[in-house]
Amino acid sequence: MNKTKKFILTDKQLPTKWYNVQADMKNKPLPALNPGTKKPVTVEELSVIFAEELAKQELTTERFIEIPEEVQDVYRIWRSTPLVRAYQLEKALDTDCKIYFKNESTSPAGSHKPNTAIPQAYYNAKQGVKHITTETGGGQWGTAMAFACQYFDIDLKVFMVKVSYNQKPYRKLMMNTWGADVIPSPSQITQAGRDALLKDPDCSGSLGLAISEAVELAVKDPEGATKYTLGSVLNHVLIHQSIIGEEAMLQMEMAGDMPDVVIGCFGGGSNFAGIGLPFLRKNLTEGAKMRIVAVEPASCPKLTRGVFHYDFGDTAGFTPLLPMYTLGHNFQPADIHAGGLRYHGAGTIVSQLLKDDLIEAMAIPQLETFAAGIIFANTEGIIPAPESTHAIAATIREVQKAKEEGKKKTILFNLSGHGMIDLYAYEQYFAGNLTNYDLSDKVIKKTVDELGKIIGM
Image (cartoon, rainbow, N blue to C red; front, side, top):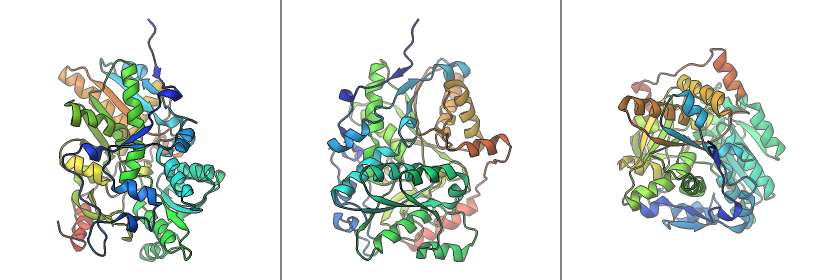
């Protein structure tokens, strides 16, 4: 019996619109606030650091946004990405559950990040911007932005979290190959970086701090010719990433199937929202009952142990105040190898959805995720990025739970990236050098309690 392994859309079948779940949310997210006035931010204020069209997308509640032809042209380099039936993984787990994964590792940068990097570079180029700053945690976003800026002839400076800069030199080299200047964060070239190093000369960095450095460099450009881009958290990023789920729904229809559970790893929300929110639309508008599950590291558990509060998106307080589940912008995450998940807060859309119990969240310790990644590599043949192993580990948990309950489920997860540039992490795992990080309530309480100084809720 011939079994179809993968489902791929033709160029003519590719979605031509991004989806914005806010249009279908009964409770819209609270507004982002200007930290000075405490009033909702405006397009004009956001346009100081972002391209104007991105600022407009950040605040829109329009259901669908047309994907520009120029962006579609670049998408076609690798899209559609395959929807894959994980037969070998099913066999290894001895399950009657059906497991599918969306393989976003096939992009030039090796992850889902170009889905928003390309439109962000495009809108900046269209506005005449020639210089962009950004940050990167595990290196996937910086790599994607370097690829996108090279394509649209924009120069790029990337502040890469220092622990990842040291752990993942080949990510830096990929960015260099596409013409980007990569700076370990914290650095001496911004006030935010200098302040962090003065406080802790051995500071290994964080995404929040790298964001501070990138934003500072952009806003302090004396000629005002530099803009900033962000790879997760913000509404316009999640909108762009919806291309993942829009494709996946068409591909699931090709397979004659539909998931009971949709799973994505979670840092700030980009790949989770990309795979999950288009399927959530079926719950919100058609009465479907799919479970949409976000999976975060146990060492950085903003969704499962954080608080819902207005907070800064960065450490130095340069960004608007965002209503989010957060551990506090001063939280310093452990040096886990899933660098892209080491972020203190969650995007406003995802936070509101979790607050309203429309999605679920779970936290998984580091060693369990790597063990899951090894199983996946030995069955489906792809070495997953450390971030993606969280979604795989959650899938394995779902299979075990279904077995205990005597149920048969269809599970879809997002393979957000491959781990071919992350082999150092696997080397450390095999050597027994990785650990699970125990995060005490006291540590969380310290940074969460500081939120009261910002704004009461």
